Length: 231
Image 1 (cartoon, rainbow, N blue to C red):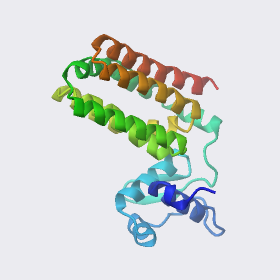
Image 2 (image 1 turned 45 degrees about the horizontal axis):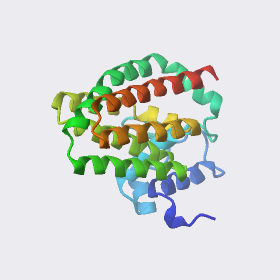
Image 3 (image 1 turned 180 degrees about the vertical axis):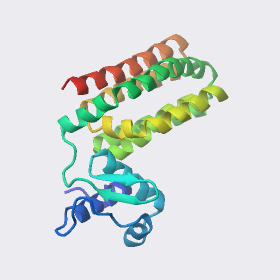
Image 4 (image 1 turned 60 degrees about the horizontal axis):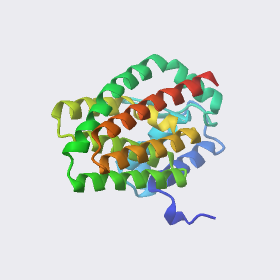
């Protein structure tokens, strides 16, 4: 049995919320306790509770209604078919983001290979290792978090303000995508290899190879999306 101390705090909150939702007397459509109530009950911060709600929403268990709160919409998590339906429903929008990323991120990788400091590259590599740990622990929230951090850190190391601005906007739009795509184990494994190749190319200061691996990574994300939809 895994020690409780090794379970990420967000996952502990998610587990508590799932237990609450599964309890007898809690009906689909019912409003769940507020962020403040969860904070007081579990002694955690609001940021942690919000992240837990986002994970439950990504898994099809709750719906967040702005200004109203979180509502239970199902007691059963999304299966592969339901997950595929979500990706199919959002396919056009997701591919728009992928198209923009395919232009922005390879350019960033090329610039970073030349411009980043050794300290920045070490930080990027540490984030990569944190992502791997999240995959090993099957921590979907952690995967989404460190995937976003890795890509963000690479972009920020470019020191190009316009690229940084564009990347931040993209990140805001694909947070649900990240939470859902890593529910497919193969996608997480694909990301580990892709991230490794990019990190090694950056450390080698190889501009062309860094750009190439960044392009391949975004292309693979598009392929993973197509595989899910075709299922």
